[in-house]
Amino acid sequence: MTRKILHLDLDAFFCAVEELRNPDLRGKPFAVGGSPQGRGVVASCSYAARQYGIHSAMPMAQAIRLCPDLIVVSNRHGLYDDVSRRVMARLRQFTPLLEQLSIDEAFLDLSDLPEPPAELARRIQAAIRNEFSLPCSLGVATNKLVAKIANDVGKSRARGAEPPNAITVVPPGQEAAFLAPLPTRALWGVGPKTADRLAALGIHTIGDIAAYPEAELVRLFGKHGHDLARRARGIDDRPVVTEHETKSVSKEVTFPRDVADRRTLQRTLRRLSEGVGRNLRRKGLQGSTVKIKLRWPDFTTITRQTTLSSPTDQDNEIYEAANRLFSAAWKPGRPVRLLGVGVSGFGRGYRQLSFWDIEADRDRRLQETLDRLRSKYGVGAVTRGGRESGG
Image (cartoon, rainbow, N blue to C red; front, side):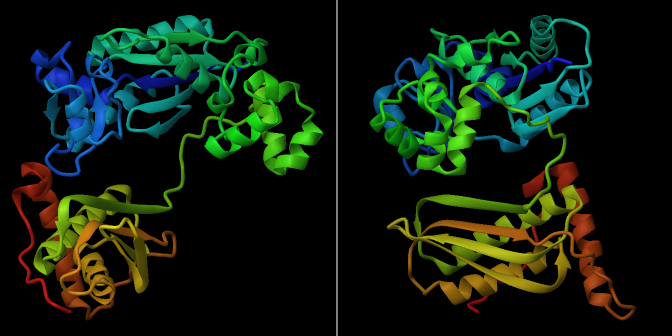
């Protein structure tokens, strides 16, 4: 059976959601992200803003220089997460074979459905537009590799201030021909260094890779050479994976300006720990390893981790462990650019409370109460009282 694989990408997702909240933004150059006064970066930008050369991950201050009239909108991650969950739930009504890649991107395997793949793509695009008022683009092919590249190509052809809403279909048997004229960088697994090495061999397109002797690619690139040869011919047997094992749960923040105040850093550490704990409980996970990440002003980055005596999903336990690591790694007065907290080491069993472990049980019940209140009134509605210490 010929597979029907779709790659769906919600066009400028954060911006599209913001336009639903504020229709006055439609057609205007605006960006979602951090403040231009600090170290804010562009998380997403409207297609009107892209006309000025603005793109995601660009410093917001640079974006303002390119477009002085740019409207800057703060991130609303909770809102984007909620809309994403509803969109993905709707996509699963087409097929349970859905692999979510990110908040706004997914693969679907529609091989069991009788309609032609192009018709399926149009039906899905219409459903997302009519039910959520969101634009999306789709790539359609017999495998994940070509479907993703097809979508990238379709979106890149769009011009103007409107979302592309592209549908790009690669018919069965045409995979290699479709890929052949594209630059090597369009192929998965070809980064800047590999592209430079290929260019030195006179290889500039995916078709050039496909025509190059595979044995020579393997000699030059090892196992990666074999992968390059297969991908260049449009071969990809990977299935759509409906679930991925969570390896770690983490949160981090880059400060608008370097922070050297202990109390501010520890309050941030507590807030990050609470966010990690909340995500762990939402996912039904407990972890034994707590890790912190520190980045200094010169971009030097260090990580420190510790292993707990038993797995946890409790905010306070995560914070206490993270704070011990922080106090050991940070010298008073040293500025910090970025701070992060993470938990890993899942699947090692769950905490067994002993009969006399009253304090731990009370803390867990308090955590459950906090979760209910935050769910009802918002994350910032209630916080733990606590004194950040110097040790």
